[in-house]
Structures are given as structure tokens and as C-alpha cells.
Image 1 (cartoon, rainbow, N blue to C red):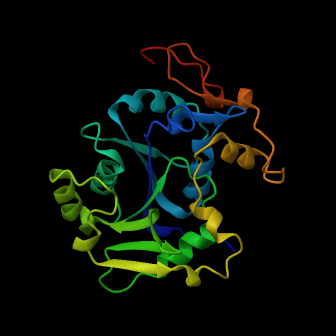
Image 2: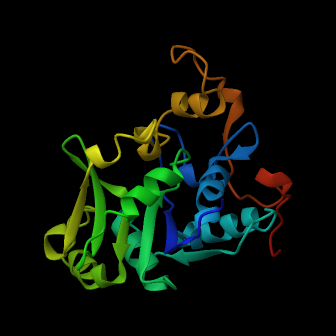
Length: 242
């Protein structure tokens, strides 16, 4: 039986130059399939809407890519107001753009998100909760987390004070921490929090049953640059002004 959608928007934070990957992970593809497509496929079925929060320089190439996608629903793009503020700026811009009271925030490099983990996390909120995060071991996971619009004033204060860590505003909001024990009964729950940080991570995404010691074929990995006339993911040919 199909479960009802959560009364929440999903927000994918783009950007980040991905030094270990060699480029912007927002435009990373493997064998012609964008990693972003896998993230979208995971989120669209059970969220009210999906937003992409990106830097101003990424909007145009991203729009060109999305134009060729067979989407289940509209994906809205919101831009950072300024560069150099990191994911905290994306968090603020995402919250400002929500059509719902809550947003579920993830990175553009998190293709293993599991619906059961997300729903269990959502079920851990309490009366008065403003943010809902998981503690894995001793670490609070700031992405793969729920934030309400009521966090916005605390986030904006951190931005003004140039405190740019994602967790910088936690002390100023009603933070609900979901302990790992609540997820322990879900098979492979830790995969839901995993990101693509090195080429070997992509290799495991494409071939989950191969030995980790094998090296990826780097010819399978490419970054879409958004240049005019470039053949992009989803079979889209890109031209200036279109």
C-alpha cells in the first residue's frame, strides 16, 4: 500500500567544489546518469515538493539539465544571495522558499537516502521541536535532517555574525536529537546518510556488489560543465539562450 506523502518539502543543497572528486558534485554523472537524478528519484515520491538550493553561477546550467528530465513533479530552484557562505546560506534560502512549515535538507551527493529512515526520523519530533537531527555515534548529522521555518531567524543571525558552520545555530533553537538506537531495526540504515566524496563511492553506487578494492574506471565519471552545445545528462543538447 502506498504511504501518504510527508507534509514536508525536500531541499537539496547544491554547490561545493568537491576537491576530492575533482569538480562540482551538483553536475557529477556516472555512465551518463547524473547522481542528482538518483537523489531526486529517492525524494520525489514522498515529499510535497522538491527544491534545489544552489549558487547563482549554477542556476543556468542546472535549468538546462532539468529541462530534459522526465520529472514526476516540478523541481524549484532557489539561489544563494551571495557566494562564499557555504551550506548555511543554502539552508536559509531553502527555508525562505518553502511552501510547507518543515523542510528535509540533504546534500546533492546523497543518493542512498532510504524512505524508512526518513519516516522514522520524522516520527521522532516532539511538541515544540524546531529541528530534528540524528546522532550517529557521537556525531550530529546536520544534513539528512528536518528544519522548520522557525529556525530562520537563528540561522540569519549566524550568517550575519559569519558563523557559517551548519550547526552554528543549534544552541538557539529547540533541537530534537534522534538517537541511532531508534533506527537500529532498519536494515542498512547508515547508508541513508552516506555521501559521494571520492570516486570509489561512485563505483559502489554503480556496482554495489563489487569488491571495494577495485578501482573505478575514471572514463565513466564526468562533470557536466554547462557549456553551450555540450551534450548533457538526460540526452540534452545545450545551447546559449535556450
